Length: 58
Image (cartoon, rainbow, N blue to C red):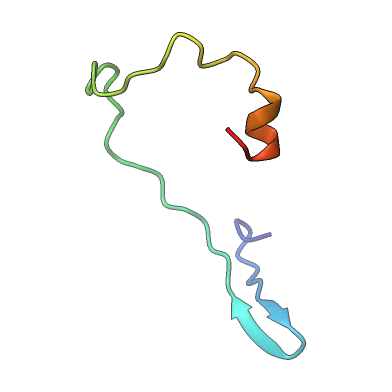
């Protein structure tokens, strides 16, 4: 609806809260590898988390 030009206003009761609008597309292309080495991921990144973690004791 927003793309068709229809204005949408989100409200709580009769109070306007927000007006969603389309996001402008980026004109700059993304560059693969631009920040190579800037982020580190541990070897166990995708391992299940322990029960202690979920219990809040880890």
